[in-house]
Each structure stands twice: as C-alpha cells, then as structure tokens.
Length: 352
Image (cartoon, rainbow, N blue to C red; front, side):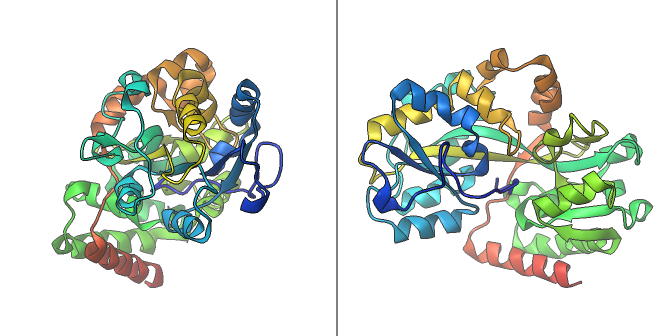
C-alpha cells in the first residue's frame, strides 16, 4: 500500500480477532489489511474447507513485524504485506517458500507479478494479489479534467486551497519525483532539494495534509476538489453515490502500489495456508478482493475479469490498464539512510 487505504476495526469473517491462545489449531490465522476482512471474500474459503479464518487487521509493515515478534511461533499462518517489504521479511526469516509452480502468476497482468520484490535468490516467498495507483483523485464537476493531466498544474496556485495531500511520504514524494523527471527507482540524496521544493509548493497551495479517511472525507464533502496521492482505492467505493468523484493518471505518470500475500515460516498449517494464498490469487478470490467493501483495487490476475461486472470494470478502469501500467512507476524503495532523509524532508514539508 506502500499505500494506506481505509482502516476499520479488527475483525474476523465471523467474529472479533481472537487472542492467539484462543485460536484453534485447525483454524487459519492471518495478519491482513482491511480489504481481506470482507465476509464476501473469506466465507467461500471457510465453507469450502470447513474451517474458520481468524483475521487480524494491521496497518504498516513495522506493526506487523512487532505483532509477529510478540507472538509465539505458529500463532500466525498468513501475512499480507507491501510488496516492497517482502525482501525485508524474508531477510528476517519470517516467510516460507511458496510452491511457485502452483501459483497463477502466468495469468497476471504483464509486469505485475513483481518477481524482483516477491522472490529472493530465485525462490518465491510471496505473490502479488492487488495493485493500483497513487495518483490524483478529483471532483470532475469542480475542476477542469484536462488540468488533471499535468502534475504541475494540479498543485499550482490555480487550485490553491482546493487541494488535500495524502499524508504518506513515499507515494507523494514519488509523484514529486515523476513531476521532475526523476525515476522513482533512482532517487538519491542529491534529488532531495528538488523534491523538497515541489513538496513545499504542494503544501503552500493545499488546504490540508491528511491520512486516508480525512482526505476521502474532504473530497466527498466538497471541502477540497483534489487529492494528491489518491487513486481508485480512494474514490471507487464512492463512485455509486458520487460518480463525479473520479481519478486519473497524469501524462507524466503515477506511482504504482502493490500488496502481496505469503505464508509465514513458523506456520503449523502450511498446506492450508498455501491453499488460502492460491484462493486469494485465483480468479474468483481476486474478483472479490478487487471489490472489497473496504477499498477497491486492480486484481493481479487478469482472469478475475470474468467474475467482474462491466460496471465494476469501468470503475477499476480495466481497459485502461495496459496504458496505465506503461506510464506508472514503482514505489520508491530507499535504503535506510535515504529513507530517513526522505522522512526528514517530509516532516519539514508538514511543518512548513
């Protein structure tokens, strides 16, 4: 995520997340993002296998790592994680190798399997399940849609006080890099002054900088007309009631987020955990995940399209994906030193 979509209370498909000691050995226990808590996604798997899936929702890889550190080995079976953080989890010895020959990655959209992030030394430890874009959401009744195709216009004085900036440094700094013709994968410390100048321009012209719920609410209520860093995940769930709230990928491009799923090394139920991964990344599971009640996003598996309605595909911009994928760049993946410097610049922007 990478992106940070809407978060709701911790729950399982049938009950509140249970303490680890109360989880039955035959159950499947998963640390997930909120889109996996939709009963429409989880209940078909539970019914097929005659088990219960206990879900605990979390936000941020650091939180997941802390939860795992505080848990006993074997307490958790499945982990949903930012694709860019998979190598970090593998290095920590947390992820089990997946049977690559049993995964449906050959059906994925070109380039979405994210092998460079979900594989280490040729072994697969996670699989991409959902992706989308940190880009620009806007009210098409209030702004000129043509202006939304140029990043520099979006956060210019023309829309002063009509902008909200999504409060997550990596995707928004990625957009700033793209606006300055800097590849998101090649950001260096030397680029930070340029990015800082662009961020300050955003802040000068913004009404607010806020997390997802605040930004989404500001757009839905008309407090702002543009959300920098938004995308389909922010407006798709509003499309039915407020079709004027939409999103686009500017001509310069956008930042592509991806989330992945894998099995934990200490799981005592690896076979069932692998079956869960296969279900989530199979066509029907993918369609349900893509249209989760928490937030929408593109399914990695193209065959999910057979299980989506034309209206759902329209909201997801299904037919536009080949062009979008060409223009989007991956999340910045800075090393620890550069990451700290980028966070410092972001803090300066917030205090500006």
